[in-house]
Image 1: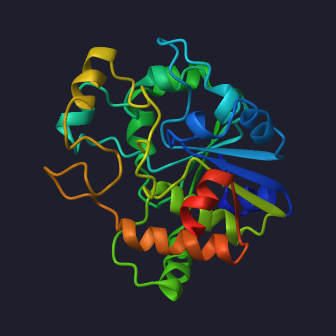
Image 2 (image 1 turned 45 degrees about the vertical axis):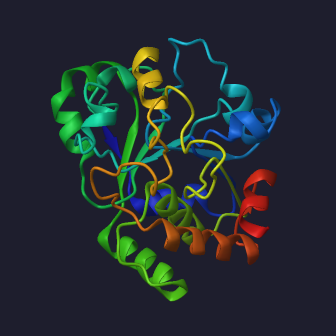
Length: 261
């Protein structure tokens, strides 16, 4: 495994056209099959958490909507099974199959300073060292503190931000020429789930079981009733509206309507 510094990553981002693409389900329902081409037109494309690869088992052509370009994976690498109803036996982060096809020179960016990827790397060290030519970067504590200060200057922020919000603010602080965000809704969308089907790599029968549950939604409020959702969705939506309305980020048309209606 090769490492790069946060300063190296900043140099890569500064003055570039950057797109952050998340897994929200509305992208493949509302944005049309040319959206992926638009994503791929950016200098740097950042994907989130489990978007290392698209589900292959179900033959879904998600590249039409989410693009195929992939320079950076921004992730928390949270490999603890904190929701047994959802992730039991489907631990995406602790499964080497989700990393083995990573293209050369991908940067794995752990955008909260916990170094959880090290646990994954140690577990699969021989496989990683044999097959992957990738780079790893961890967020320094002082940068995380700067992000929290930025968030608190906009709204009170007590809980840990989601991976998507951390990625957005950390990239903004690197001063890109343009930052386009899509598929990162902060769970404001009530029409579609927060993640596309099979994002959690579940067999279809397991997904159908969940879809039959009346309380099943990936929106951070109506779902995960059995345990505390670790993020403050209302505050994150306040931040997103601030970023959009002040033209600090550009977003797709569907997301713009949700926030600016």
